[in-house]
Image (cartoon, rainbow, N blue to C red; front, top):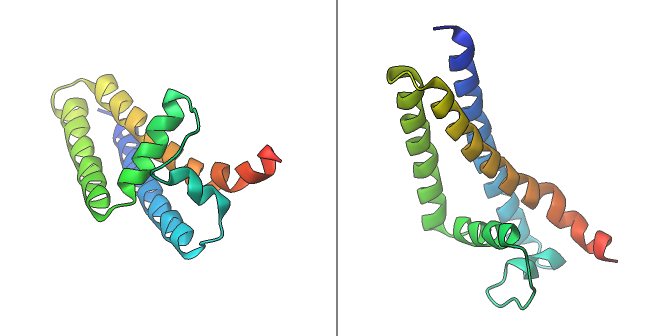
Length: 127
């Protein structure tokens, strides 16, 4: 087997860990900045109607904001990497393992993008 799939697999794991760390750091910054208006979006009591995708994002961020959520998310990253690595390289389901890991990585990166780029700009967009 070529080195390219293994390098791509390692790249996906690094991107997941970077997005995990970036999301964690952004949530810590949100807690330090009490004035940030988007923080109300992640409160428990919201009466806004959202799409299903945004509801899942907000619930994921709420879960990730707890200590247990951070631990479970890190264990999920390790577990998904292990399972997808087994699928891709030991059971010869290369595309299934890599596409599954790529989808999970895309979701982790989307959470980081949402916290880092989209939410700070939302008050300006709504004005």
